[in-house]
Image (cartoon, rainbow, N blue to C red; front, side):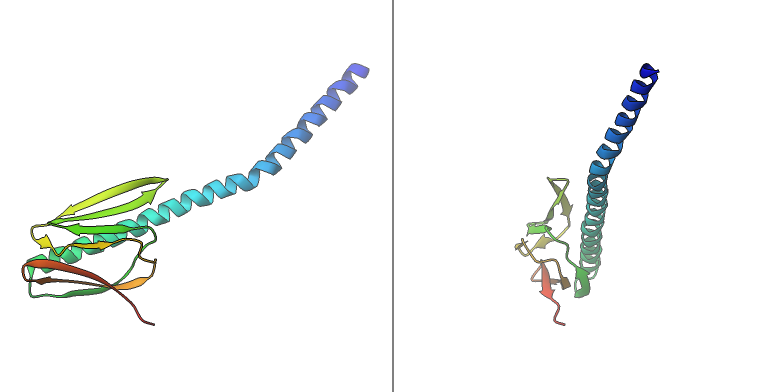
Length: 141
């Protein structure tokens, strides 16, 4: 009878330890899931802005007399460097810096957009003196 009693105590203690472990680790699992969702949202924000800029550049290159204006949401931690005929986008995903490079037919007016706050800006793209001019102007409320 004592052998059965010992097995019951060991099984009960095992279940107690398992429940304690799961109750401790559950908040961390939720944190990890939220982190993965946020990374996915950030990547979508970066991709949306880069695609908007690429589409705007194509429109302005096709019609040089056109000045492109659009309100865009600038994401956090996106750095843009415009030089020669390249637009370089630097953004962090999973603690690694990713670089996306756009090459266009015309040259850019050299600009660097680093450490801009994540806000809504007016994106203005035009061609002046055979150079593509890109500006982000902060939207006034």
